[in-house]
Structures are given as C-alpha cells and as structure tokens.
Image (cartoon, rainbow, N blue to C red; front, side, top):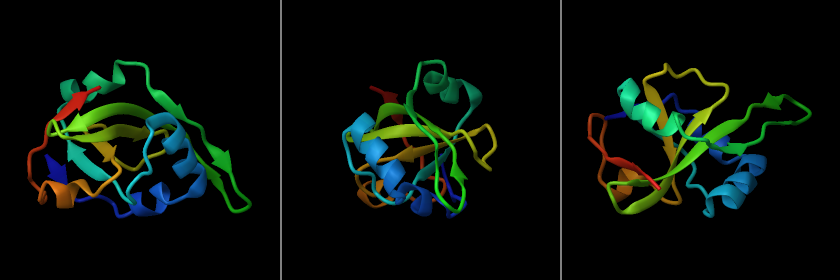
Length: 121
C-alpha cells in the first residue's frame, strides 16, 4: 500500500555518487524520489531473503552516506524498478522504498492508500 514518505527520497536519489551506482547496478537513471510502500513482513522478505545488489556508502566533506541494498523488480507488471533498503533509514521495518526511471505515482495515478504489485525480476 502506498504511503506518504518522509520527503527525503528526492534528495538522496539526486546525489551523483548514488545516481552513478544505481545506473551501473540497475541500468537506469533514477527518477528523483522514492515510492514508499507499507508491506507485511512476508512481502518484504520476498526481497530481503535474496542477495541484494549493493550500492556502496561514501563520504563527502560534509558527512558520510550509508550503503543501500537493492533488488530489481517490476511495478504492476509494467515498469522496471528496484526495491531498496537503505542501511541508514528512519523507516520502520514494514516499509520498503521503490525507485524507478519514471514517477511511479504519475504513471499509475497512485495516491496514498493505493495498492501496487511488486514482482521480483
């Protein structure tokens, strides 16, 4: 189920060091922002029980950025995406974030409360 995010996804997905690694690992330039989904633990485990693609953390002069675990997936059977779990997050364990080359909210006319289907690639 789609939920309101913390408003930080746009910032993090726009950082060049992350963008470059997403492109190398996932094969697409990430749309700025994440789609936040509330899931039950078994749905999250569909991803977390598999070995992730790993985005490495890095340091800038200002701060340290953590790594991100990624799993390629498809949203609603139509759009390439990736489920991600940042190593540093303020989200509870029933939340998974999704990144894609497009705005998933716009493509599928999603609102908070909308249901989406994620399928592993």
